[in-house]
Image 1 (tube, helix red, strand yellow):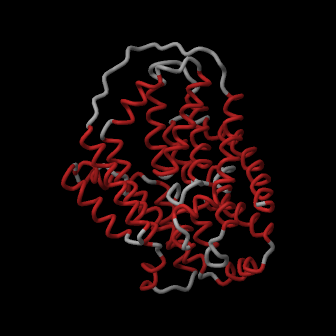
Image 2 (cartoon, helix red, strand yellow):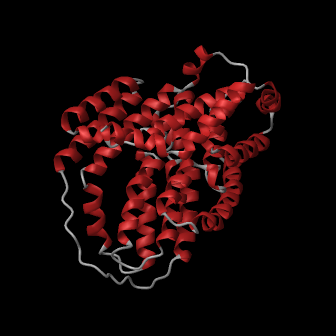
Image 3 (cartoon, one colour):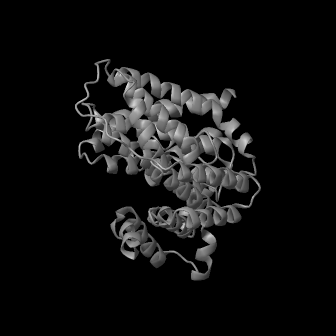
Length: 369
């Protein structure tokens, strides 16, 4: 059991890179070890931990395997299947976070390749783009929104309302591109359907705990909600707690510390301080550009030291998830799961034009709304 828990930490190259970066920053940035725990946004970590538990519970129940395999037989063409998977992963990302939505849908997509001939790599690329478009809608759709929501003081519905125009336009645009990127050629199935048993008791337990956790978040009782979720799975299904990739939480904790060390650098502070007085266009461009370089989650963490958690920042860092591979951690997760070396450069054929379109449309919408 201990080996299973430690294995993700040993294999997570991104976590190792963050640790090395932190060690280098400790050598050049002024800091005190006692200040490092307070550099971590614990509300974000607690929310992520709860959502990861709930998602793993739903995954282990077998619910998505059963529903997916039954529904996919109803699609006659490659285009219909691709549109369904893109819509499904976008919808899941609005309440399960973009990362965990991919952990559910991408393995299902890879399984479908065994049943019929589909351009699986291209579908996974669109799934990665879809979670960036879908997850920006709600405050629990992705880590940067969790952070912005916690700092903004807005209610769940108010935060969702401010993100709705951008989410609708980007998702509609993605569906149009998806329509033209896949053919109407009929699907030819090559294997018989297999039985996929599921566990109704676990799925109902997960759904009830999910509602409890959402209510706790809304009432600013995140830690109590996490305790209830953990205790529920400890009693009902311990394998949920041991099956989680806990290294993902470590990644975000180290990110917070690395950004804290970065902010401590006098040179960087001098460079970013003028953003507090910058124009809306300059701030928007800076947030999108910084997301391309260091990913939108650490970019959000960094920029919140200089600008308020308002709609402009929320739109900009979510748009920054498109474009280059580091723009969003979800991009890395999806492409790594695909297991195709060529997918890494093919991804940018779609993501870079999407970034340009999202930035132009997003800033235009912001000005008129």
